[in-house]
Length: 83
Image 1 (cartoon, rainbow, N blue to C red):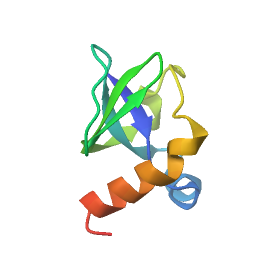
Image 2 (image 1 turned 180 degrees about the vertical axis):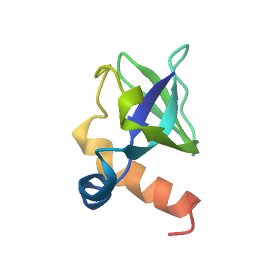
Image 3 (image 1 turned 90 degrees about the vertical axis):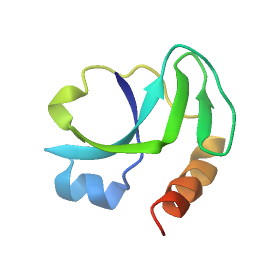
Image 4 (image 1 turned 120 degrees about the horizontal axis):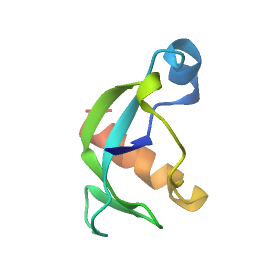
């Protein structure tokens, strides 16, 4: 399973040596929608599938979210968890 890390720098500084907050990435297809964020060369981040991931489970960098999309994705995740 691939993941898009969505936890903040403050959270990662406090707990990043053990775990991060991430969303699952479906690598099989590219979808767009309210809770879906396409990631070039990686698939689709499923923003409604928020999980804690052990840092040790993150093996390699597969792809990155385009910097122009950081704000929109952060806002959507905050909306989903009740801000």
